[in-house]
Structure formats: C-alpha cells, structure tokens
Figure 1 (cartoon, rainbow over the protein chains, first blue to last red):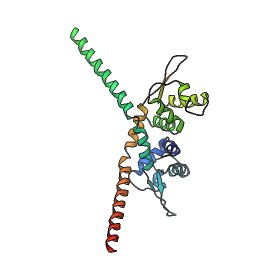
Figure 2: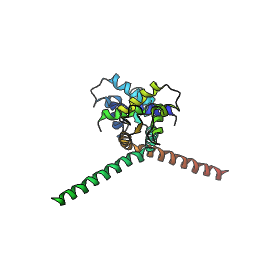
Figure 3: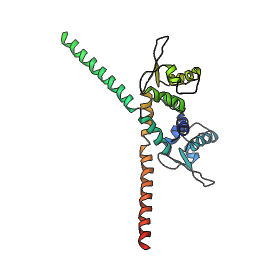
Length: 116
Length: 116
C-alpha cells in the first residue's frame, strides 16, 4: 500500500461521524437518508462525509439513481491495521511494565501489612 | 477512549512523515536532529510534526533543555488498533470471497481443459 493511500485512510478515520457511519454500515447496505437519521446533521453534511469515505475507498455506493445504498469496503481498514500491527510489541511492553509495577505495589502492600 | 482522542490519533497518523518518525522511534529514544536527518525538511518543519505527535500522545519528549529526546508512546496506537479490530471479519470475508472466486475459476479452468 502506498503511503498516500494510508494518509487518505487515516484522514478519513479521524472524524467521529465518519467512524460512526462505518459502524452503521456493519449491519449492511444502507441508504443515505437512513445513515443521516442518527446524526443531527443535514443531508448535504452527511453527503460530504460520505464523499470523503468514498474517496478513501472505505465505502462503495450503488449505481441506482434513486437509491444509492452505501456499502462498507474493509480493504483500507485491513492495511491500516497491518501498519499498526508493527507497534503491537510496544503497547504490550507498556502493559507488561504496568503489570510488573502493580504486582510490585501489591507485594509492598502485603509486606507493609505484615509489619503492622 | 473518547471519540476525540481517536480523532487526534488518526489525524496524527494521516501523514507519511509523521508515520516515518514513529517508525524511526521504534529503535529507541532519538534527538530531533537525528530524526530530521532522513527527511528533506527543515528542523522547524520536523518540530511541527513532533508537536502534532506529542499532542496526540504518540510521543513523549525528554525534559533536558539541550537534548530533548523523543520516545514512542504506543498507547493511542493500541486504541486505534482496537477500533479497527471490530472490522476484521469484513476484510477476512472479502478475502474469503476472493478465495472462493479464484477456486471457482480454477475449477472451471480444469473443466474447460477436460473438454478439449
């Protein structure tokens, strides 16, 4: 995947409304009107978000003139996840460090308890 | 994690230079000058990117006035990966569909071969 493509994917995901639209599409193809319902937004505002998602290849829209349902396309999400995967050992390390620290605290707490 | 925090994380990741900076920090704490070396960019330009990464909590900078080394902080990456994880079954499904399609093509190809 080209760096540009990842730029577009991450930029499209950097908005809570767009992420909520993707979450809504998990349950299947949906019309723009239906997508707009849960949001306090005008149809043009939602359409703008859909265009960003479409350009990022995260959704595909049907060709029917009247009803252009949106469908989730997960390919770019897979590539974003693959990029993040390289850093897994770092967040697991941080967790290990926290775990060691908490166990140390507990051990000290027990020692302290015995002294009483 | 709040939606705002994910906004900031994904926005910070939507730039190839910032992703390259994070990749560089995988090998350990690094000074700004060292970080700037592989890029054809001025120190102020790199500093601007570092500020975005710092605000997103993706890096932490040392307190020494002269040498303020940057360190990777993977916590926000973990949360971004957790968000993406919800969509895994979609990209795996797409792969399954492609796999079925290719096997179907192969099967048809064999049938065609026998007819000759």
